[in-house]
Image (tube, rainbow, N blue to C red; front, side, top):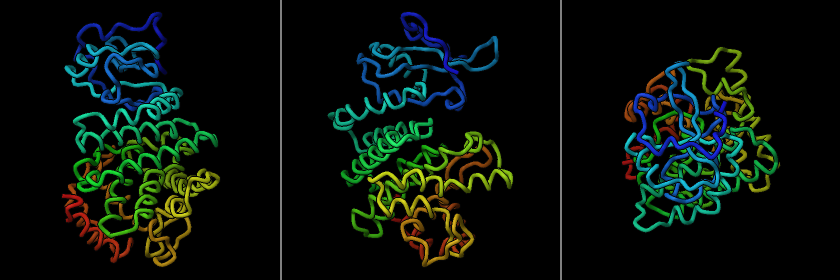
Length: 350
């Protein structure tokens, strides 16, 4: 649980940080928290939410969250510099403040993304962080109709930002994240699928559907027991049966939201179907599976293989491509796998 607020706010960042206490490996969700990248915070501007830093306690031998700035308090430039010197790239905020943080980003996204001297790579990183904050709000438990509508609206805006700058999807490999979480994986699938759609020559409307569908394809996991998403090993047969509920759960969550197109719903519902009929939830075969869902299925498998996971290290891209071609083409469809391999070798990925 988050630490109690200190009266008047913490002054931890008024001095250099103890390196032996800040190198903490944790899942912020265990503390009811979500990450906030420091690059999204403006120096000397008021904090939109309470911000914490994890510190290792020598007494308990465990990390705890220490309040470093309260909502409304200016986040000093000196604090950013001290965190940078300590090689800290993020701070944390309680999940119950995620919607406040997202509202702040809604208001200031234009300023963040259109700053002078903004490189395409940096702009892409900002968009990814804004998308991650949006997904954090969803997986933090806000599954109300209003919360879902906000999530979908922001997903559409992030995809619009990605497609409005042609350079963002011109070299996707440079900006993919290798750390596997439901957030980073969803953003990777979104960007890979859009890049592949552009390589394929699809209409812009279909590319955007791939982006929104890729970003929301695992939304149903928000309704599953949290331990399933972070279990440090392979799932049991019973746990796998529970996990396989997520496509239908995601479909049921998103179906009432008017901004979710039919194409996006089909991606969410059918992104685990296989061309040979061995997939789920409906066991559909090649021609009965919606085309965009088939594309996301291939991208989903590739990104899972090329990301670091608790039970297996990331495969190099060439090895993952070989696995798709030599071991999974029959399952996923030789036609799509061959085209995806060509995409991986194209300028969109190199």
